[in-house]
Length: 569
Image (cartoon, rainbow, N blue to C red; front, side, top):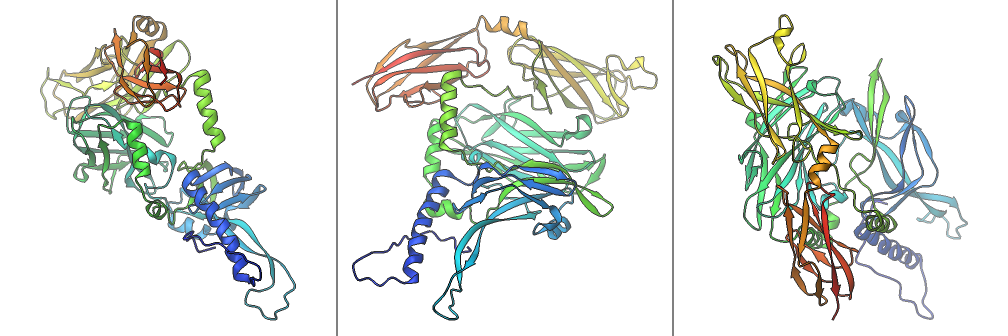
């Protein structure tokens, strides 16, 4: 089925004595199919509804479990029973292997249909043939082509993803929200994927417009990454805190500077350049309202046209080349998040939030912390690597400082250890204990309890020959100590109760006591009880009732307060 035009809609008009032809019956089927597919596409979305997990059977064979998916025109793709295939027997195998990176290929699925069975035809040599039925099915194939950043997925409604560098060995993406409020801080993520056994390293500057680094207020953000300093997992995230300018209805941008880009594999320089522009809209609207308005703003033709030609990616299959043969090394299911959430799932999520509370994501690690902090036990740990720039040829007793590092363990006291990263390993403490190690510097850290951050200082003891030094840091925090600090924190909502008419609005104020970071997140329970924006402006629903408005600390989710709102005419 190559024709993906779903409308305008035409249906049969029946009357006594009408002569029905093949065209009339085909119109009947097309009308019902196109209506259903349009609803599938615009109401439900694109992607896997259930099942279709891809599992490895052996070094050259995969199995696709039964399941359902919607393609980019809303057609249902049904795999009614598990199917097992050798990679070499799938369409596109030779092209994908020869044109790709040889490190991975993508398994895709598409809708297909064909004739089935034979029926008696009283018209000899009919152009329509003798097929009795049309069998709807699917086609599995391999490709080395990757989707554009604009691929349709749930996350695209609230965040922008821009790939600034892509090769067969490494991908670098910039991710930021689509909307922020003026003069607020938000996370900006740099996601790195590596596909080679070589260790990658790179650095570059990002030019910011209407945005600033929350750490030092600079309009230039420096990105440093060195895989040799990390446990090689293939996936890494660096999170930076940016602050939006105090403007409205203005676009903030983050653009990598190609002139500053340096790339190396196993410390050997490589060619490449970064490009791409990430944008966030700075708006006075509530973030929920901005997202909804943006979603509804697209015309139907635009919405459908944007997804024409998009593939449905079931899996990324990692390959290992051995004696001229590609063997399966790993399988990542639905690598680009092409899922469709059913109404049953969304309803369950809402009920779970009401019954058991919303589980907030763990706090993000510092901008230079590539290793996430561990969970469980009585101690919280965060770690990372920071590069401190020096002046080559600097004399003794010179002091150099790092940028402000947010350790991600919250406010209050933490313990920090520092180690110098050398070619032979990481040295903690005094390097002079080990023969032959450089003793040209000393390390120290200064902690800011009120900001949850610290600065690393380097004191030169002799003349320095290198341009920089890499410092591995580890932050520890005792959970009992953290709990004691939280006990003195409190949120109070003014007014402490509220009687309001349907559709009326009222400003609520959250007063934070003994808290340096006074950012709160507002919510309403149940979700049908009205809306409240990030500034505390509550809008009552149309329905009378009693609802709960909750203010929760953005830094310490356990610290929260609520009031009861009575809505009546």
